[in-house]
Image 1 (spheres, rainbow, N blue to C red):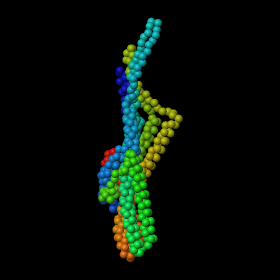
Image 2: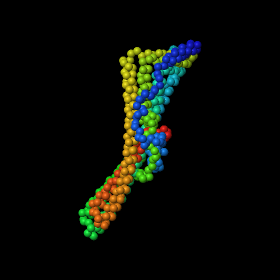
Image 3: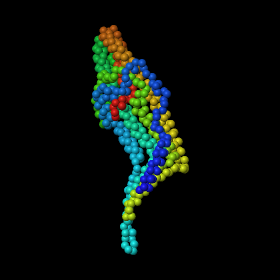
Image 4: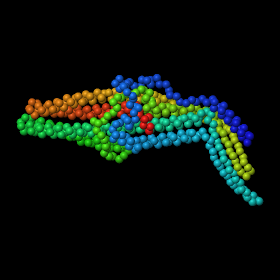
Length: 452
């Protein structure tokens, strides 16, 4: 027993002396000199806190849309797969943590020996253990790499979720846009039908001709054709929406485009918020972190492996104990260790460039969303003014036509321009909403407040 204690003390002292010379440090984020100029902020969009601080429950006021988002989070296929990837990474981290503990086994043997005097039975029971000392950080870096992989899988799941929420919202508002366009087209169709009756009455009174009636009928049929096209688009969009949610195709319950509201003041916030809010940026940095620890693991392959082994054997002769320490230094491995290190270092450089590019892409997306939002808001204001003028023009030309002071072409032209203006106003309103969603998504989608 004294020898056993002596050996343990010797090995422990060796471990302490080596561990004090640890050469590995934890990952540190690389310095990025362009962080403060990732994107340009527009003066009229920076008078409040960033919309990235809002959860999707706060951001989307439409309660029907909120229910669809909840359903999508529960049943979407891609998000469900992402959840299981998190479980896989957590299992790998658990295995990496267990590597710090000794491994133990138990073996039992029995046998019979035949002699001239008869037979004798023998048996033995041997518990044993083996423990690898993490002197050069191989196990530590493996654990840190596994922890980074878990965080990366979580960030991936969050990225999938924010993308899913944005896509559900965008598709939902597409349906609202199509509904609004359908309503305008159907209302215009009824207007053309009234015009046809008016023109036929004027023709009988000798105030117009058959050409005017035929032209009005042709325009009415053109609008009717667009109504059929819109019905088809709505049907297809509902099917795509159902597939996105993860349910069978159904009629999608929804609100109206006119009743949609968002936060009054929007802000892109600070560039640092992209780092903290965007899951895909976090995922890219975690890939860099994982590559950093993989490089450390590759370096550790050049240094010795220290193991402590022992067993306790019990047989008819009594107890036998043994404890030993082994050190294995790699000498020649056909260049495999050096090749693995070069491969790991190259992968780390790749991950660094991908992280930098992800930041630049994030800046571009925020820039584009801000400019698109400002442009759409300006266009909607112009559309509303144009519609007011065209409605007045249609009313005046219809009144003049009834009194014989203008011809049918002016009426047709005015009504056609009004229809296009109303459809354009709906499209621009949709683009405004879409730009808000894109900005919200580009800034991270408020995942920190959602907590899932």
